[in-house]
Image (cartoon, rainbow, N blue to C red; front, top):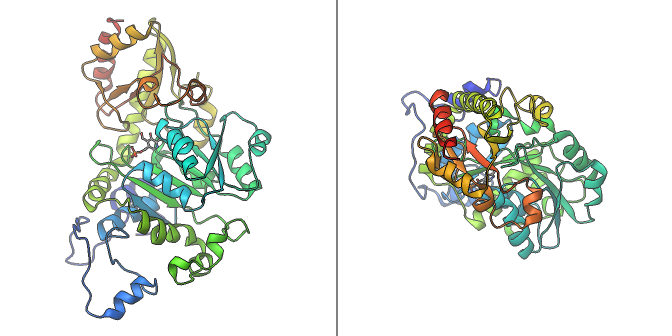
Amino acid sequence: MSNNFKKGTICVQGGYSPKAGEPRVLPIYQSVTYKFDDPSNLEDLFSLQAVGHLYSRISNPTVAGFEERFAQLQGGIGAVATSSGQAAILYSIINICKSGDHIIASSSLYGGTVNLFKVHLKNLGIEVSFVSPEASKEEILSAAKENTKAIYGETIGNPELNILDFEKFAETAKILKVPFIVDNTVASPYLCNPFEHGANIVIHSTTKYADGHAQSIGGIVVDGGNFDWSNGKFEDFTTPDPSYHGLVYTEAFKEAAYITKLRVTIARDFGACLSPFNAYITNLGLETLHLRIERHSQNALSLAKWLEKHPKVKWVNYPYLETSKEYEKAKKYLNGGGSGLLTFGLDTDIEGTKRFQRALKLISLAVTLGDTRSCILHPATTTHSQLSEKELEGAGVTTDLLRISIGIEDIEDIIKDVEQALEAV
Ligand code: PLP
């Protein structure tokens, strides 16, 4: 399918173009392996002289259909799907960094990412310096070291809901000659194209808005094909790889060096692949992403405006509220909506906050976001509970912060539910 189609069309039809007589819907190829008649065919596939599927840890036709649709939607040149968003984040970094390297990350991140960075990357010998999303370009540059290999941030920080200052972070990455990696999960590929704003690699937890129905865990790494890996800082891309018969990625794959290397080494050897069934489910989810995200965004804005006026509500944060300090950036970087997350604090103590959550009937207490069903969470005691006080502050997680992931139910019913629950406060 042509890349010139609009996003809604790519959501519905991208990534799979059946020939006459083939299934209309991308089928589930629930097969580990593929049959060959000639040993030379297999040899060519193993040595990357030919293109095709040889083993489903590395690639699979259902997963490939999903990857292709997602890459088109996100405006990248290629993508590798992973078993979870966490795996996508890890892969995106270890495809570039090894022990002794360093990255700079905005501190306003999902709690699991903070933990992955500060504990596990550290254990692997990769150091992460966290900088405030408000830091100036000079402050970010001063966090850089000789061995800095990437800059990392989230388009819409979860749960601070700050909008990434793409211009500032992208310019800094350019000065340092390192790739700018963006987690675009909360915005979804429909609301934001980070590649248009200077990102080089985009990752998603497809568990969230891509699937959209909270049915399958998954992740994806998308390559913008817009970074010069032969700039002298990334020798693994420009020198012969002993694990691939001396292949030089930049020579063999040009602008697709990053995503090819990720697939044929990291995905092959670490093995966190997406199953064909989960790829099928998530691909189906993508078919309504454009419709869902508009409704999520409308519902969230309506609830945010309603909450702003309620006497028991101390504060409300939603990037598309005109009163939000993120509003200008939201208008600049998001395509017509603020997505489905909003946060607020109640004029009560922690017990009152708990009473409010218990009293909700339609909105469920659940650990996810981007589901069609509305759900609520208290990040300080759940998703971000492993963070220190300082890290909580860096991630914008106050003890009174409640995060609602607005679903696509009728807004009147959502508001009624919140209204009756506020009576318990
Ligand atoms: N990135 C963001 C912004 C998230 O919110 C999450 C999970 O909540 C992840 C990544 C991790 O994704 P997964 O749960 O699919 O591993």
